[in-house]
Length: 122
Image (tube, rainbow, N blue to C red; front, side, top):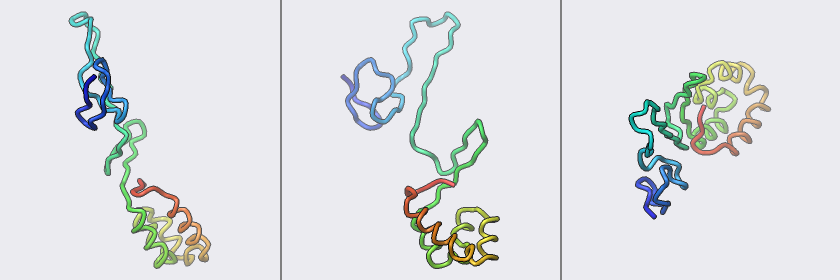
């Protein structure tokens, strides 16, 4: 048995990836060194970065605080302040021109924001 250098969880000696945090704890051992077969490195991470990029879709994620968005929605939702905070300019202008889509959009957004994790990514 050995310990993960990232989370301290006890794992088997043969493990290359930690079973708790999923991080790679050592290089893969190859029995075919020098044969021309490349090493496979698995680098999984469950934590998202504030400016993470998903390579396949080129999507940039921005971290937002749930409580800031909720306070903005409660007090300035009819102006679309929470939409501007999230970077959704088009919806912010729509909320501004329609008084929060006649107040119904603000109520729906309050409920949706209550059930989002903190932080959430837009």
